[in-house]
Image 1 (cartoon, rainbow, N blue to C red):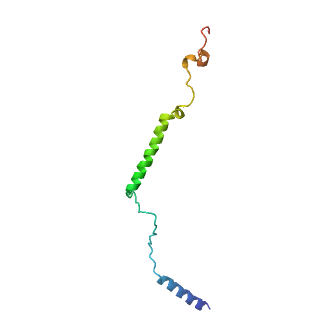
Image 2 (image 1 turned 60 degrees about the vertical axis):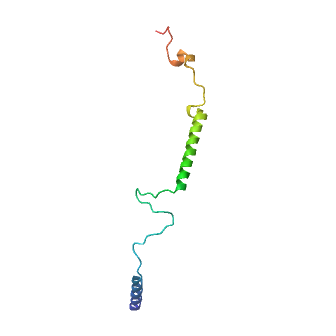
Image 3 (image 1 turned 180 degrees about the horizontal axis):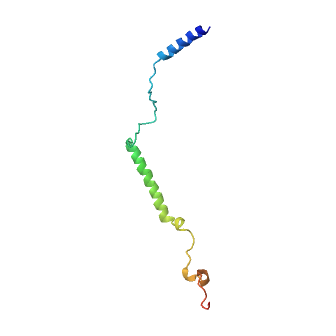
Length: 98
């Protein structure tokens, strides 16, 4: 019984060893071009136009709001007039203080 199972085991091992599969098989992906270190594929003309358009709209948006809504940056409150501050608010002692 052990011999019959051993023979079958040897037959299975020999059939498995006959199936030659490449060891270094590269996986194929359909995601785009290959990109190596510091070798980025060139962008197409449509991608360049889209990138410049989006960048231009971004800078227009930033500069437009800096010019028209500058209160968001400096604050939307009236600036205090320094001449209206009292000596007590400034921490200056009174004249008759010894």
